[in-house]
Image 1: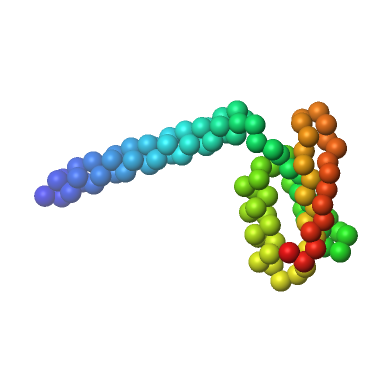
Image 2: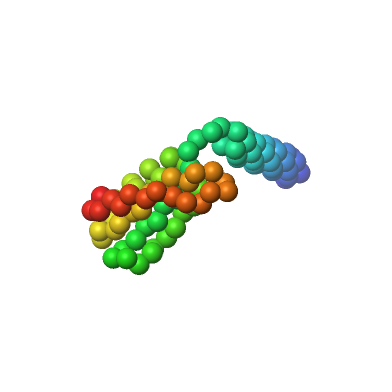
Length: 105
């Protein structure tokens, strides 16, 4: 009887490991596909600087519009008033950006 439980436990454990491995493989495939899609598409890229009274809190370089929206949403939930500088990244060789300051978002 105990041997039957041991065998069943080992079979369950093996199925669990296989499911975990399959799940991790699917996650990796999704990350790779997302990376390839982002590199192939010609989306505009931005440089974003989050500032607090002239002090740079964080800088993000060469990010897409979705990430810019995530940063703006995160900053609006904070209690302090931060400045956000958003500049368009014009190609990989040209780092010059045009910035617009947004106060009290």
